[in-house]
Image (tube, rainbow over the protein chains, first blue to last red):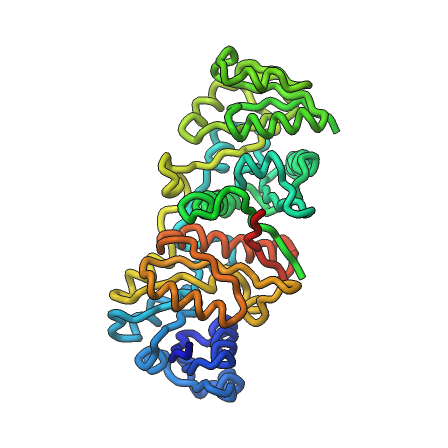
Length: 210
Length: 210
């Protein structure tokens, strides 16, 4: 399969994906607001690729790959003209500039709500991201299932992590309680993969490093 | 470490965790609204465990493990009395009854916003959950990194998945575009682990089944 791919936003993400998509045999147009900028020299030399305006990259493309920083996303899309029927791969994330949260979508969490209701308690969010079958047996071929937790009290988190280890999990500290805004959608992802997507309950999202 | 653990909500999650925590040597009190209910017989026979009211389970505990269905959570907490200084493990998720979303916290997504701005385009959310270093090389010891994507147009999703495979990813369909409400917090989890938690960028959350 060889496609014409128009990159809108050719920074780290768009640049890397475009370069590799060109290497894989696609025709890639790197769209940028500054086609003549010195930072585009390297991408311009990629075989099978060219550098152009964002609008031109999108106009001639089978597939538009959107990789703009969130604050630039709306204006970038509006500069592309008519997109009817176009296939657009959205690689953006609505991150706050300091990476402390999302600009869109997440506004609170059950964990924070529980902490309000349980006034004075030291709340740790844990054991919420996997089904009870995994709680029963967290062994995946000799590897302990990853278990994320978060909370604001260091001692409480240590106890929570110790209990998780007692049960055979590999506990991973995901930060303060506000991170429940990430771990609860994470739980719903597990649920939707197991049920709606038909993968079944014997799955886990495992933290792997290299 | 042996602790007194009070389970509040002794269904599948609380029952499984409490049973295994008792097996690990802790003293477990299974708190339930119906201590005499027939469904509690099995838990009552777990060595090192007893069945009691939710309030009693919490009162005598070093650690409260909250595992109620979300609609019952507020009343359950309010029935526990003073929780000052208590360590509370929150295992709940604010799921909508039909598992279609979260009652708290997630209300929209960048992906849905992009689809509104890019009127008429067939939007697939993809390549948003991992850093560009993983985009450059998705190989983790011979295993292709998992890449979740979502969207509402089947053909567009097939193209997106094919491109991901060209780059060496293992693409996993996470469902309709609204699932961006899960994949964007997932992205922020990756970012916060890589940076704020200090794990570095050479990590991935890998879908593993057994």
